[in-house]
Every structure is written in C-alpha cells, then in structure tokens.
Image (cartoon, rainbow, N blue to C red; front, side):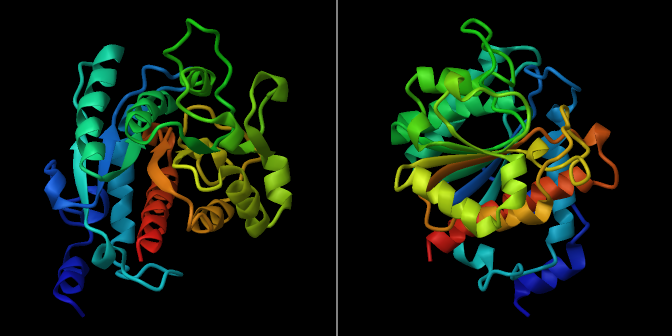
Length: 305
C-alpha cells in the first residue's frame, strides 16, 4: 500500500470537511481540478434546504474514501489528477448579485489559469452564473443536462428562479441549444418552447445506457461542453433528499453508467445540484451526489490519460 492509502485507511471518518478528503486550497497552482461549494437556495420554488447540499455531499463522500482505485476504473484518480477542495463561496445571505460577483471573481481566476471545476450546489439556479463564467472562457457551450424538469419555464423578467436558467442561457448566447441534450425529463415540456433534445425518463428507462450515451455524443459532438446534474433526475427512491422530487426517475446505477460513458466528450465544467440533506435519510441522496461527482472526476481523469 502507498503512504496515502495507509493514511486514508486510518482516517476515512476523521476530519470530514472536504470532498473525498482532498486538501483545502484556493491557490490555482495547487491542483488541476477544484471542487467548489455554492450554498445558495434563494431560487428554490419547492422545499428549501439545498444550501446544505455542499456540506452534505462532502460528509457523505467519506464513505467513498477507502477505495484507492474505484471500481470499475483501471486507474487511481488522485494519482492522475491533482484535486483540491476550494471550500464554499462566501456571499451575503439574500443577495443574488453577490453570488454573481463571487462566481465571476473566483471562477474567472480558476478558469483563466486552465483549471477545471466541479461545483456542488445549492439549488439549480447557480448553474446560470456558472455557465456565464465558463462562456467567458470557452465561448458558446454545449450542455448535457440531467433533470426531472427542463428548467425553461420562466418569463423574461423572472430571472432568480431555479426553473429559469435554460430559458435565459440560450437567449444570452451562452449555450447552443442545437448541441445540448436533457436526460430524465418527466414533467411538462413543449419542444416548441426550446430546441434542446429531450430524452425523457420514460425513454431513458427503456433504453440501455450505451444507447443514451451514443445519442448524447452525437448531439454534443466536439463542442466545449458543460455537464449539469440535478439530483432529482434520480427517482426519489434513490434521492429523496431534494426540493422537487418526481417519481419515475432514473436509478443511480443507470445514471452512473451514463456518466461513465461520457469519456471523450470535451467537458470544461460540471456541477451537481439540488441535494437537500434536511429531507434525506441515512445520507442516501448525499451519497448519490458524492458518487456522481466522483464519477465525473474519473471521466476527467480518463480524458487526460
């Protein structure tokens, strides 16, 4: 066993304050990938509490720390990628614009330095400022969006709502709807209201994971791509701790298989949102969020082999 493996075997549940026990740092020189928390839930329309998501996900990630080489991958992630936990962004409670400013400042610095960021929400509204920050660095983005909802519902002036981001982002020229796909949708949507390809939950649950991955890759192509995963894409049996649970979603196994299949896509940014620990039981949802986030990092590691 390596020194790090020995240390981790003794300290899996000690000092649980960072994602996967990674070192805390805000120095861009210290890592290739940073994990950043955004404890914001002012855009919530259902049950509040996703401001506790980053902490819940980090705590649950302790259950994943013992496995140096995660199954079914054939490499050790942290031997291939330097990963650090940036901590949570600070902004005054109740101040939307302060969130925008914090994202612009912190992400602008990281992305300009060539770093990749895995963001932990918070409600899904945080994806709008995150997309804006990534657009400044990479130009127009493709998007892979896992969710029960399309989040294209709102009118022009209703910006601060976790169902409005993907109404605004295409209109701002941030994402290319013709290169974007939504997976797991199972609430009202009209294809006439947006140009995203939709793989509904009913369809996704009948297709095999490889077929879903093939459709995603055909849609996205080689565009710089942002991946956003709302935990309510999963069925409430696998993720009860969220603000707007909808029955009939994906299993955690199916979602993980799809994420693993995204190797080769030009992923420039990722987020995992809408975990609400106060509605969770036995860390079921937080663990699902931590596991999905870890798989996203492994995809990055595989892409950089």
